[in-house]
Amino acid sequence: MKFIDVYFSPKQISNPETFSPSPRKPALVVANWIETSLPIRIIDPVPVTRKQIAHAHDRSYVHGVLDCDLRNGFCGRQRDVAESLPWTSGSILSAARCALDNGLVACSPTSGFHHASYKSGFGYCTFNGLMVTALVLKAEKKSGELAFWTATSTTVMELQKSLHDLLLTGFVMSQRNTALHPIPRDLSIS
Image (cartoon, rainbow, N blue to C red):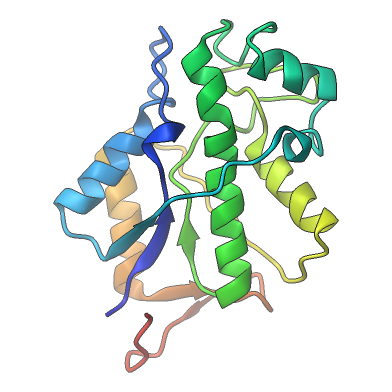
C-alpha cells in the first residue's frame, strides 16, 4: 500500500493568543487527513537541539527565546511556544532526513518559518526551520537534493486536497534529482 510518512507530534502545538492559525494548524490538518483516511503514517519527529537551531540563528537569541527571556515570533514569552519550537523544526528535519534516506516524499505539517531572521522572529515565525534543516544536513554532510513544497493556504480543505492530489498522482521525490517523478503504478511503497 502506498503511504506518505508524516512527521508530527502534538508537542509541535502551542496556543499563544493570536489570530494566526499557524500554531494550531498542524494538528487540524493531520486530524483531517486521518479522518478522511488518506494513506499516511504518523511518525514522531526528533526535536532539534539548541545547538542545531544555532546553525541558523544567533546563540543568544536561541537561548533567550527557549528560556522565555526574549520574545518569540508571536511577540510574547509563552512557555508553550518555547516548548513547541524544537518539535516544529524537528518535524521538518526528520522529514528531510527520511526523504534523503529513502528517496520518497515525507511530510512535515508545519508552518511559521519564513519570516524569522538570524537574531529575531517576526510575523508568527520564531526560528527558520527550513534553514535549520538545510544547515544541519550540510553539517552532517548529508548528500542529495531536496525540494521543499510549502503550502501557503490557510484552510484545512486546501491542504488536504493538495496532499490528496499528490497521493493520487503518485509522485516521489528523488534524492538524485530535484524534480518530482511519477511512481510506476505497479510499485508498492512500504
